[in-house]
Length: 251
Ligand SMILES: C[S@@+](CC[C@H](N)C(=O)[O-])C[C@H]1O[C@@H](n2cnc3c(N)ncnc32)[C@H](O)[C@@H]1O
Image (cartoon, rainbow, N blue to C red; front, side, top):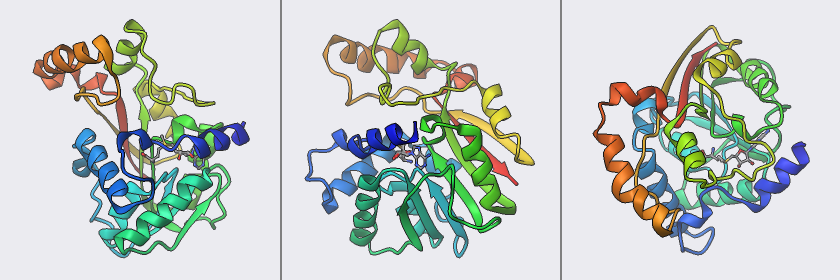
């Protein structure tokens, strides 16, 4: 299964279609960073990219390195692992163009990390646990390489969310629904997966924002009606329905 997952992500770099800029250019990385932090505007509030100066941080499933570059700019000593060699090659280019260093950017499987126990102060996995073959094993590995008292920051998709319901009702496929593995979690299931950690807090995020991805009448209806109506509802009512479950953990 891991071979099929690697093969998929070697050919389907996340968010690549969100820019017309030539792949691997400075404008390409700038566009994808801008797109990401527009869509995930809450992310810097939950994840302090400048808060780990001097600490060793591992990102598993780092993709083209958009978040990892931010951690590096914030002074963290970063390591990135991704199954996809294509993603790692782009991440290396991204670091070079941004003038920042990584301790290591390497193609590999997060379920079998080549690091000693308690090597990192922080482990980060955004949008990766849901795509791997054996999620409990990935969590076990991330927990193993984390120092006692260290921080784990993770994101998976919420099965009980506005986006999952909308995609079923409107019969519009989710992004990467064709990936070999795509597991969605309820808040309770995600908490159970993170049981190895001593402390866990889960915050649902990612409410509707206008989409560049979907065209046609469904896209127009979504952008003009759904987004405004949903966001007019009191956030406290709809908070549990956020598409991204952000977990902040302590070992
Ligand atoms: C949706 S992309 C997310 C990329 C980036 N973290 C982000 O948030 O944009 C999922 C990434 O997880 C990687 N991945 C999936 N399973 C993995 C595993 N077992 N070990 C390392 N990387 C994995 C894929 O290669 C892909 O680059």
